[in-house]
Image (tube, rainbow, N blue to C red; front, top):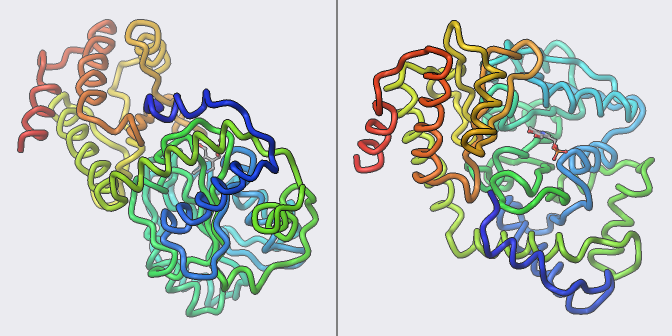
Length: 367
Ligand SMILES: Cc1ncc(COP(=O)(O)O)c(C=O)c1O
C-alpha cells in the first residue's frame, strides 16, 4: 500500500523536466538517497527512470564490459536475473549456486574467489523469491579481500532492513521505489560509491549511461524526460522516511515481521528460511499439506482484497510470499491478513484453531 501523503503528492501539477523547482527537488532527493543508502561522501546517488530492473541494468552497464570476471551469487530467481544481465553485458560469469531457501555462506564465496578471482561479486541482499537475507556485510569483506568490487541488489531491503554502503564497503547498489521505500513503481534508486565511480567502463547503453545521467541530474543537461509525478512521489516517500528515522523504520519492519510470524506459528504455518536468515519484509510461508495454494491466493484477493505472491521456479505451489513493506508494515495489516488466511484455509477444509493466529499476534504486539 502507498500512504495517503504519497498518493496526494502524485496528484500535484506536472512540471517540465528542466523546471528549476523540479531540479531543486531532484537535488534534495540525491541527498536523501545518499542518506538512505548510507553511502559515503562523494557517492553518486540518484534514481533511474524505470523499475528496479533498470537500476540493476544501470549498475551492471556501467561496471561490466566484455571479459569482466563476475562471481554471481545465486540464491534464487533475482540472483539469477542479475547473473543473466551481467552475461548480456559481456561478463565471464561464474555462478555460485545456493539451495533456494537458504542464505549464502561467506566461506563459500571466499573459496570460490580463491579458486578463480573476480573483478566483481554480485549478490541479492533480500532475495524476494525465497524470503532469504544474504549476509552482505560479510560477503563484501570477503570480496574486498580478493580485490573485487561488490554490487548489491537492495530491491527488497532498502528502507526496510539495515543496509550500510559506507560501513559495509558496498561499491554499488540498486533498489526500487515500490517496496520498502513506499512509492509507486517507476523509479530505481541507485548509488555508486567513489570506489565504483573509479572503475566505470564505457557504457553501451545510452539511456543508462552514468555520465549522461550525471549531466542531467547534476549539470542540468537534457538526457530524458523524467516523470515529474514520480519524482514528487519518491521525494514525498523519502521525506516520510526522514521524518520516521531510518533506524526506527528498520525496527518497525523487524517488529511487524515478528508479530506476523508469531501469528503464523500459532496457526501451524511455518516459514521456508530458518530463523536468522529470514527477511522482515518478505515472508515465505509454507503452504500446508492438502491446501491448493493458487485457490487460496485467489480467495484472498477476491474475498478480502489482499494480494500475496506465488512461489517462483522450484518453489511454485509450495510457498506464499507475504510482503509487509513500507506503509503495509503495520499491525493492522497483519491482523487483517491473519484473519483472512484463516478464512481461506477453512474454505478448503484445513482447520486451524479459531482466532489462534490473531490472538498470538496481539500478544506479540503487546509483548
Ligand atoms: C530482489 C529483486 N530484484 C529485482 C527486482 C526487479 O524489480 P522490478 O520488478 O521493479 O523491475 C525485484 C522485483 O520484485 C526483486 O524483488
